[in-house]
Image (cartoon, rainbow, N blue to C red):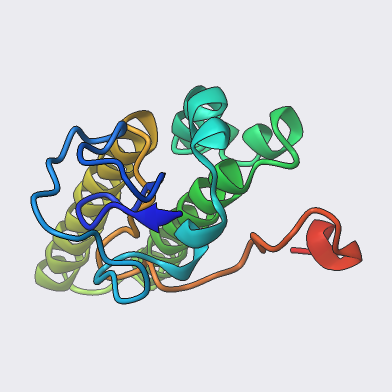
Length: 167
């Protein structure tokens, strides 16, 4: 098996067009040195992606970010995207809580306006990253989100491992 150098999807060695992103491979496909592909992508099968695109996409909905693990508990694809959405949710809410606490300090009006602007920018960035993640999940891509994508909270190891269910 090899990985597409565009989206990171696993494919057969002799495949010239990636079934996920329809990227043509004119040259030999990289087997070990694929750039910008997370190590989690090596273990995700194409069947897993095809059967679990919708739960992975739903993981980016703020209220339902952990529900896809209950729907597809053994899917590495879903667990990858749930991890991305958990990090995104934690980042967005963490910054929101810190800024909310600062609002209660009854600071001067200019400082409150600056905090409100930062809060709004945080909200917009988290929304944009969530949309990017949902699009990647729906298209079958295993791509890390910019800036926060390298952080891992939810394990994507083998389901046979007893530590698979730990977060």
